[in-house]
Length: 349
Image (tube, rainbow, N blue to C red; front, top):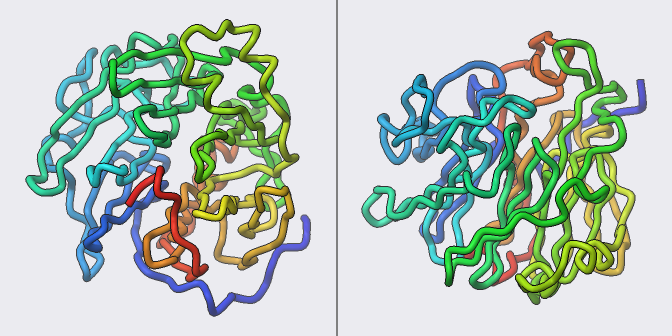
């Protein structure tokens, strides 16, 4: 066992608790808090709003959160993997479209579902099925002007959605930069699937630089790569030309989640050592916080007040990554830490 932190850091504020594992958190400009549950431990509500008292309220309603039982997706979530408030002030929900990484995709399940917070109703649905593969698992998204970038953790690749035209393109298909090619470790332990094989999660985390010119991305096990967004945004660029522009940027550890601020500093969870790293645009790496409570911190969120929100679902203890044994210790928490930095304007407001 590697040396793990033993003392709680007082800068980490325990903010919300749950008896199910949540993987994402996002906040609106007027202080509303939304969370996503990936069904890592058991089925249930997948998207919820948290009240001031911490009550978990299905969002946008109970119907969208009903268990999916049909052969084709309709107005119900299949597998929500993440969510975030966009630059337009709406809530963007990414439905992975498959019940788990490596599982067959549900027809019509891979979608971006957009909720108008003024009316609490779904205003847009973007069908991502035409650009997915049989075992795609759409993982996360980021905004950059009229473009949205997404990662596919099941069938390694990046997806670009042009909001001005509705065009979908799949890029860097099976490129080494998006494929998980090395073991994943958390708390010094090799992560294994229920059948005992090494766990693999392909293209996962991604961040756009504050000026919108660079996309940083990686499989869960690292390393992190970088590519200029102009190459991604141009539909005339050939696959070979695009591959030539990829730069291996930093050798990162197994990572649950990231965030980026307006100065270009990336906040990255080191799942193996229960810490959050800060990485400057010049690739200077420091430990921001190390704490025994940071058991697989997942998709982090930076709000306009300079607070970093850190959901801690303990996914390395879930049956999916723990050799079939469920070992999550409840409750799970969302922590908050003031870092004094604001998010990039091209990401959200």
